[in-house]
Length: 284
Image 1 (tube, one colour):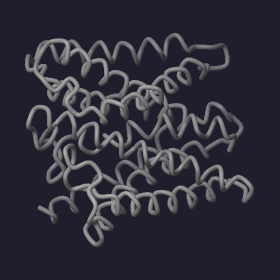
Image 2 (image 1 turned 90 degrees about the vertical axis):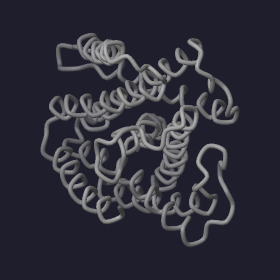
Image 3 (image 1 turned 120 degrees about the vertical axis):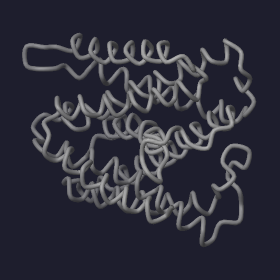
């Protein structure tokens, strides 16, 4: 299984990097929307929307929301970032609330309609703001003169999440003794979290340096990287919570050795809005 996971990762990573570097933002936005909506499809399954027609309608409604946001953001000079920024901020607020949900493990754990509604809303609040943040980071709309650096910033945001995930895995296996959230994800440890933080911050600082961040701005970038990694862990834990509620091991089986798409993007969808808003607030 490990060999299959490595081969799949070696295929996916270059494709993702090539798409970020080579595609213009509108094309990348369309590709990301497709990927995120596949993840949402799996999220809805974990929320016990078992009817295929109902899931299809809900995914299409989220696609319509993305299209509506794009249409409403039209401006004479292109697209205005204001609405996308607002939705991204809403995403950050949602993930703060999700931390409370993680604290109360049993909340919405039954199979009643009201519990399903909470999980449906959570899916939209996770996926749509993440997509908006991805579009803004890639286009660098809040700094139009920066040119191609938006592509590098998006790579940095994704790479720090990937590095944190890998750092947590290896540090957890080597040193893990203290469980982080045993009821939600028994394999995660505090030592793994520390390893993930170190890996994520190192890669984030390296990416920021390549993007032209000055030495004076490095502490601010480090702070944003730390918070971004922590929220990526929250995203991972929240998906684990959904799976625990329904007794699922993976969100799907689309990616060999990796489970479903949501299993690969759960940390990313929580991290992107935080990274975007952190950059804007601290001005680097």
